[in-house]
Length: 102
Image (cartoon, rainbow, N blue to C red; front, top):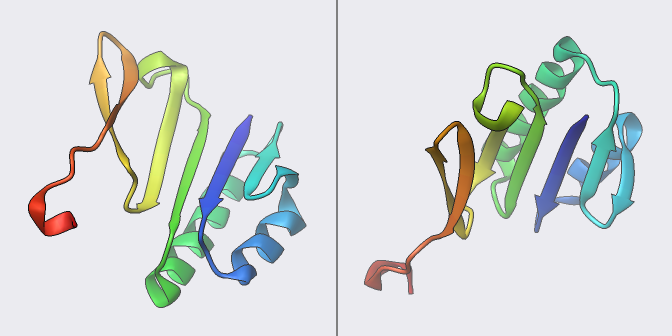
């Protein structure tokens, strides 16, 4: 299962993702049987467009048997949390605001 979550991105991302995945909620896309080649191509498009347009954030996760917890995560943009590997699983921790982030 591949899942992509978008936040505050340009409309072209939604159109593209809707063409190859099911949008189950606003900005949340799933594909139960997306193979690696398709997933990598989708992510390449997301990276290219994000580099041009910026803004918001994109998170993609998919099953990866050799990764901690059996899943892999890729992120574009700034997230309000940090991912840490601990005892073969990923943990999410809320990012602390620094004075320069205000």
